[in-house]
Length: 499
Image 1 (cartoon, rainbow, N blue to C red):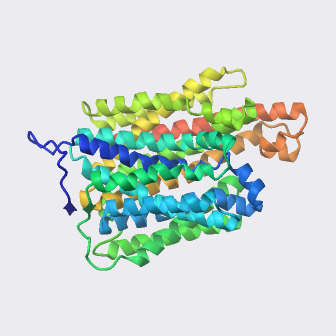
Image 2 (image 1 turned 90 degrees about the vertical axis):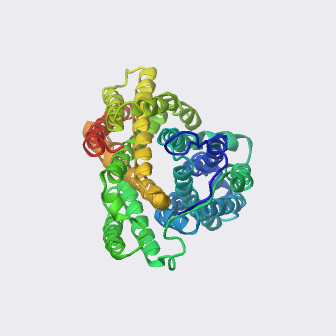
Image 3 (image 1 turned 90 degrees about the horizontal axis):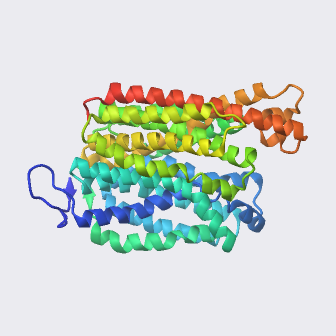
């Protein structure tokens, strides 16, 4: 492995070299692209009405404007993580930052739906370059486990906060500027990264750098497998059973099998299957996936509860949804400190159980529950969940050899993307079943399917639909609580003694 030493390291004393001021400053620089990449998943929530008025996209084009970024990002994470190990993570990070800036300008000044969709695809490609590179560089910047734990805590908190901040930032910008401003806000941060990155970030490459040509076939297989798989799961979650998305999921799973078989036969595979089979890394990926199933799957219900049951405006709901992040800011560092004094598997399991308690509290709410109780319960589940995810991320990163840090980070992040899609499908199906069974048979068919279908109905039907939706949210929360208990059990069984 090639790694340029940093003069900021404090090498006094035994053990791994400790990071100094330069490394911590570099971490702050790395947080900029991570925040923006995670924000861009949700940054169009309030901009889409203005985009529709200006560009007049069709219904299908509007969906692709919203979804293309996430699909391309998820599909290319593994490829770009492996590419960073080969060509250099700093080089890939800076290239991704430059592309993200160019694509942001292209998106801001797009004059047609097709141009905006293409620009969003480029943003997804750039994001796939940036995300695994940030986590891989943390692995090499922070050799000391305690310091690395703090750095990964910051990484996880920023990633989680970015998705929540996206709607708030877009709402504030669209209120005062035109819709393109939600993309142009990326430029100052990317410019700062391009200026400071070469000065602060050491270049690092994997041991396989320069050995033969890049495995283009494996890269194509990973993209061809993940894109239809994640897209199909999301479509099934949104519209229910249909042959086309079911076929996409089946085809994606088949190509995943082909990809895995190819990796097993290669001397220098894109994905290290031996690493995935280890308990420290594979177990961390598994519990992280379960955490994302609960997080994303339940977030859809909470957002709709704030808007359609409590009657909040989208921007007001976005602001209130930031409140649970306060619990995360306090709990994640505390969990990192506790994990230095006890087996982190037990701390991780405790975090998942705290999260399960928050979800169980939400499962018991009804129409008379005070709003503050919903916010506190949400803060409890978010605090426990993100604390456990932080430790899982750090355990996975520490288990990966430095020369495979890029591909290891990419597999971890791909698991999170897949978990998010599964969350919408699994918990969405649970909530839909509870909602339908709670609605009176005399209600109109549209009202018995979704709360949105009841918005134009009579006051009595709408009131019944809101009550049914609260029950549905409780069912989804109960499902999330069970998932968190399962994640806690897996964390203790698989990761105990493997810090």
